[in-house]
Amino acid sequence: MIEILRAGLCDLVMDQGRPGRGALGVPAGGAADPAALVAANRLVGNDDCAAGLEITLSGPSLRFPHGGVAALTGAHFAATRSSGAPVPWNETLVLAAGETLTLAGAEAGSRCWLALRGGLAVRAVMGSRSTFWPGAFGGHLGRPLRSGDTVRIGKAAGPVHLLRGQPPSAGEDSWPLRVIAGPQAGRFHDAQLATFFGADFRVAAASDRRGIRLSEPGVAHAQAGLPSQGVLPGAVQVPPDGQPIILGWDGPVTGGYPVIAGVIAADWPRLAQLRPGDAVSFATIEVEAARALAVAGWVIEELA
Image 1 (cartoon, one colour):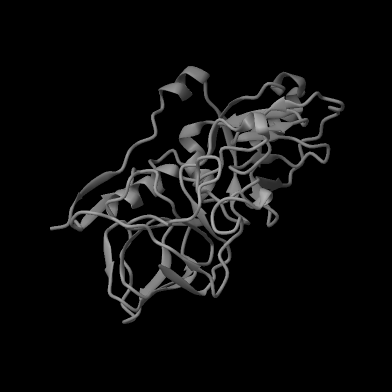
Image 2 (cartoon, rainbow, N blue to C red):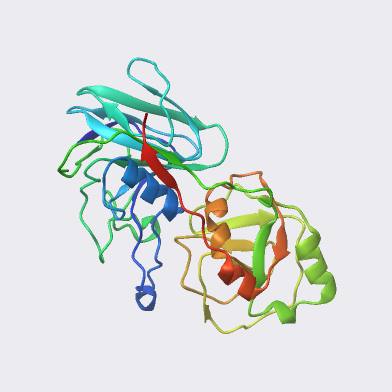
């Protein structure tokens, strides 16, 4: 098991989510960057669907009474083990009985993922161990971890292999976010579209897993009384105040605000690393081009 000596800002048990529950009003949820959690799981010898921790902006201090095997992927945090030695990223880490792993703040980006050999053994709800905090279910008691909590780790079989992972390159085209036209894009006037595609928005402090809220400049519109429609993570809604919202992983499955655009799936991992104050801009891409963009995979290899 692990003991939470000090909780981080938002430490959530996550796996690959619970797709197919939209008719019940439950979003798919799961890790904000599924590929990063899969890579962490592979580095410790887990199944891809094992539950780990999603850590946001400021991390926890964890004690391993019986030791363990861990791996960290995603945004790099200042992190140390009991000896004070820095913790490597994207590789297998073996912890002795009684050791602690302490993560401070993110040095860049927003989120990282911690996998533990055997996976976090919390109860599955609707086929997933992911936390759905707005609904207060899944994960550890339906909420972020708190200081003093303990979480069981599952059993793992077979030898431990020391591995290193190489994340996919972000490439030179990391900005702006690539979007396809939303179902109500045609209802916005040319000047409104020019504002949306020509502006540098800022991520607002009120952003969370339900939605990434953007501030100034506003995209004014006069849409009212739109019927509810199905929406997905990455949909960019424009509410009456004109401040766009990029729907997140725990966002609603239906919405009544006009959707001006949708962030393509290949760029969703970049959404996971946005933090308050970051600049955000958008550029269009054709649907067929978006479909052709496969999310690049991680390379996992043995440590020399």
